[in-house]
Image (cartoon, rainbow, N blue to C red; front, side):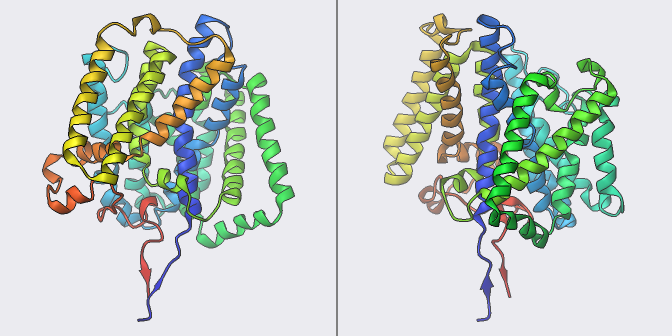
Length: 425
């Protein structure tokens, strides 16, 4: 009696779903374009549709993720309490796995054996841990937000590299704080722009036009990672600071556009948006395959991922453990044989020259991978790797609910996965 349940705003789930699918698109784009450039056309990685997609995504995708993370971190004490288990522990687990794979397969990924040098995309977890753990102390400083923006603009003058991911930590921190300080009332005011479609159309045109301009006149693609110093990328300090300001404004523009055009009703992207971590972590393996082995083998790896996803979906529908187990074991064996028998060797280091084939393979495999990795098989694998076998409740209830989305009671109240789930009296 007297309880009122907050209505869930699915715009946030949809937003996270779009952002999450954008990340494999970005990674597959860059890795594939590098092969095309090396094999067929110098400069292709930048001045092409691939360059346009890569720049468009990287001027706002991680900034928007940080904004949402900050928006749902309204309780700094709770954020600190859950920072270790929710963020740092997955970082340590997957950094260890990355380093072991790097050594085991003798490839240039994760071969540092230093947890203070985040390998590739795992910097996001490291940075998010720092933000959430120290948020309680930072917000006591009155000028935290303007100082973070100033630091973002001048950080290119400092000799940062991958150590502690400091370049990125300072580059993305303003968006985390903007999200933290952005109240629901403020966001609702921003979302009133949906009543003025002409303004949104003009904003979209400006943002797309800026990406096109950056393809031809902007810095090299590596700059958009915001991790290296200006001198390391042969840029002047003024030029670097100016470009950082441009990216800051573009990211704010894209966030404003997205929160106004995305629906607040439930849709498929909502499911993607509530299962982001398996996608974020596991797509990196296929990205490395594309980078090292070529696009063709990357596409085959994407199909294998999709096959395991299909098995888990069939299991959730029919619940036949015997059939699912046999299919899984045979599929693992078949994939291992396919990968090691030499039949794929002629495809190593290649990608199609015909762009009518190249683009569908790149973006089709990226979307297939992103969508497949939110299937029950990969969600449960992520749970196993992060929680450990001893924490898995091997009970009848668990078996019956295998692969179904669950609410983690240990998630912080301000965590994006749990927003709007509390009852208010």
